[in-house]
Amino acid sequence: MFTRIITLFLLFFSAGSFAAAPIDTPLVASQPQMPVEVYDVFNIAHPDKNDEDHRRVGLGDKIHISVHNIKDVLARAALQGKEIKLFLNHRQIDDLKPTSGAPDKDDQYFEFTLERTAVNDKAWTELLGKPVKGSFYDRAVEVSVGLDGTYAEKTISTDIRLIRIRQHWFRGGLFFLLVYLCIMFYLGITKDLLRDAGSDISLLGLKRLGRLPYSLAKVQMAFWFSMVLAAFLFIWMITGNYDIISAGTMGLIGISASTALGAVAIDDNKETATITEVLEQRKQRAALVIELASLPPTDPNYASKTNQKTQLNAEIAKKEAGLNISSHGFLNDILTDVNGISFHRLQMAVWTVVLGVIFIYSVWASLVMPDFSTTLLTLQGITAGTYLGFKFPEKQS
Image 1 (cartoon, helix red, strand yellow):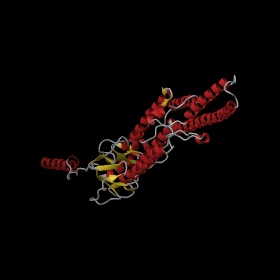
Image 2 (spheres, one colour; image 1 turned 180 degrees about the vertical axis):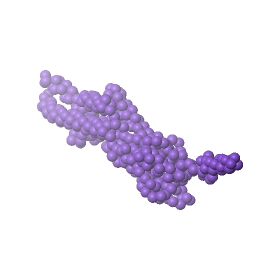
Image 3 (cartoon, helix red, strand yellow; image 1 turned 120 degrees about the vertical axis):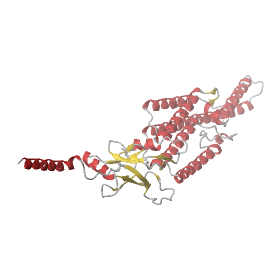
Image 4 (cartoon, one colour; image 1 turned 135 degrees about the vertical axis):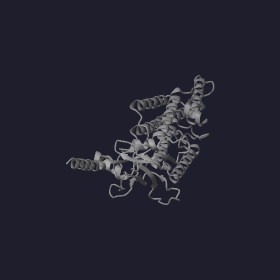
């Protein structure tokens, strides 16, 4: 009896040990899971690895991103209800969704079309703006994917170049600008494109002694037009966006155009009035000449008439000389009048240069035309108004 009890106890103990074994000691060791990481990135339009553009991508291109353990990314996206996003230099690029590859089918890659929209404009500006040495045409960028609002997955494909501006576009645009500037400078120097609009003094039988002086208002208008044209081409070639002229920039163009128009009108009115006065004084002088011819030198009125004729000759000569003004050099023309350097002219020129420097930096660094505040536009308007106000009594040196 005792032997049977011992045997049953041993059998029970053995059965319990075998049953517990699978729980405490697994029979097969689990395999380590491969981490999520981006291991290959390339431009789909250049699939050949020997192609120099294989790892260069830019706006408008379609990019291929191969990912190890992509199912883990998809599982987390489904579990958290989040979209998969593209990351460039750890910046999330919103408003872009995978165009093919996972999760549409069981592939180990994503594909994105690089597009700039109003939603992701800021991220692209940070990536494409502020070029540093060696990164004007393109720059190194780290490409990855990740869940919306989280972080970029690890990437080991770090030799990708993001195209800022395509060389053939830049060279074409630069050639166009150089041709435009050459034509403008040629016409400005040899013709009257940037000079004061002088009246036709041939009505007085006069011939101009030289080129007309440069017009500060016309130079300012040409300056802002050229700046905006160059900025428009530069930003468009990088971003592909053409709706880029800001309200502040339009305000500057409008102020400069209005100033030039006002200056031309003032000069024309002054010169027309002067020509009319000269013609009238010439008639008076002719009448005096006839009257003096009929008077003997001993006549009491002869001396006074002679003095009157002399005064008329001096006034006519002074007004004719004022009409027949000519250039004394670019800086002298735009900054001086008969009294030397005019502060209102200097003020207008300095503010134009200062705002121009701000404009250039904004376009270079942020790829946007600055939207100048109402205060700055008002300041520019006051400067232009002061210049026009002083033009009424002003005479050029």
